[in-house]
Image 1: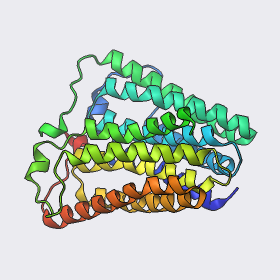
Image 2: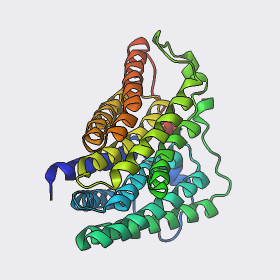
Image 3: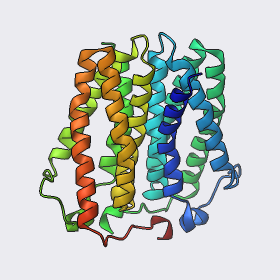
Image 4: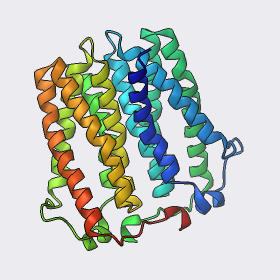
Length: 159
Length: 159
C-alpha cells in the first residue's frame, strides 16, 4: 500500500470527521427520544475512526489498480455525503433531511463495497464494517424521525 | 465519456451543492463587511453549478484511465472539504474555521488540477475554473475574516 495515497484518503475522511467535532450533539440531542438499539455516545467516534482508517486503506489499495473507475467514483460520493449528514442533523436539526442524506450515503457505501470487492478482496472486506455501521445509522435516523415527530428545525439563517 | 460515471461524480458534487441550499446566507451574511472584490450573490450558484459539471466531466474521463490513483484521491479530498466549508461558515459562523478548511480544499483542487492534466488535457483544463474560483473564495474568506474581527460563532449545540 502506498502510504501517501492512504494519507490522502484519510485527509478526505477528516472532512467528515471534522463535522463530528464541530457539530457536537449538545443538549438538544439528549432531549430526543431514541430507539432501543441506540449505541452509547462513546461508540460513535470509535466506530468512525475505525471506519476512516479501513476505507483509507481500501482506497489506497484500489486507487493503484486498473479498472477502478466505479470504485473511485463511489468512494468520492460517500466522502461528500458522509460530510453532509452531521451538519444537517446536528446543525439544522433536520431529522427528516438527514434521513434523505442517508439514502445516497447508504447506496454509495454499498456501491463502494461491491466495487472494491470486485477489484481486491481485502479492500472490499475493509468496507464491510462501514456498510454495517451506516445501516445501523440509517435505522437510528429513521427511528429518531418516527419517535420525535414534533422536533422543529433550527433556522440558523433566521438567527 | 461514460455517462454513468459522470452522473456518479455529479452526485458526489450534489452533497456540496446541497450545503448551499440548506445553509443559505441569511441576514447575518448581509451584515458582514465584505472585500471590494466580492461577487454578487447570483454569481455563486452559477459558478458552483458550472464547476460541478466540469469536474464531473473531468472525473469521468480520468476514472477510466490507468495510473489515476492521485487524481482520484485528490478528487475525493475536494469532495469532502467542499461539502465542509458552507456549514462551518454559514452554519457555525466560524469565519476563521472556514478559512482553515480553505487550506486543504485549495491544495486538493491544485493537486486534482495537476494530476488530471498529467493524465488528460481536457480533464485538467476542466479543473482550471475551479482552481481560479477557489482561489477567489479563499481570498474572500480571508478578507471577511480581517474585516469582521468581532463576529461571534453561533454555538448551535448550546441553543
